[in-house]
Length: 242
Image (cartoon, rainbow, N blue to C red; front, side, top):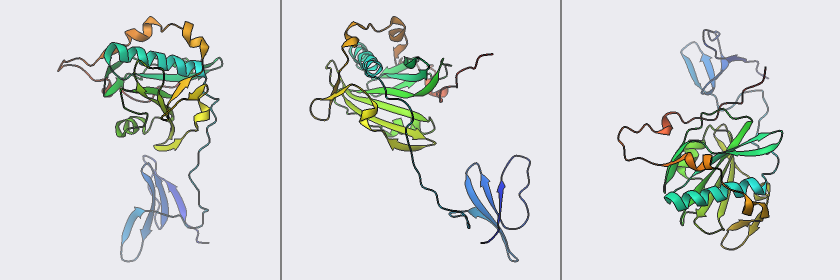
């Protein structure tokens, strides 16, 4: 086996002389010093190490039917009010999953959220809607928004005044996407055309909080409007106690 040094590139630390591997913010490189040239180039393989494979295992507990039904009921209300998409975040505490509605601007083709609020739990991901005849899938814009937002991202599609909808669930880790089995979301009952309803009798008596509806705004026709995209980023971790 060839013994080659591995250097972690840190601010203020010089790369050693001679041939070595350099692990940097933008990937792994090999630095070569020969009698005729000096070069640093991307390293596709590191000699002497075993290969690794991409893998994913979801460790979160199943997502309960009631919380999914709350999101769906809220999405239907937003569609009735504005004919638009909407978005919620979900986080996990010792008491289980909770839904949070961030401040957002919406229309039929998209939603922009302020995700900078600190929540009282571990943020696990997001749920957003596609309305009218648009099925559940993770669009190019969705993938760009979620690229470095680690967590589970759920899309509910064909949201109208009807009870049925389509569903797509994917997890994202460091820009890599993984499908999540439908069984992770509880209470789904298949109906037809790849659509579902939620078996959750408790949702009938649940009332959408007024605070949720107050946080949804149509996109204003104002040239001075500051888009939420300017502050959009993965949610901050929860604050720890003293």
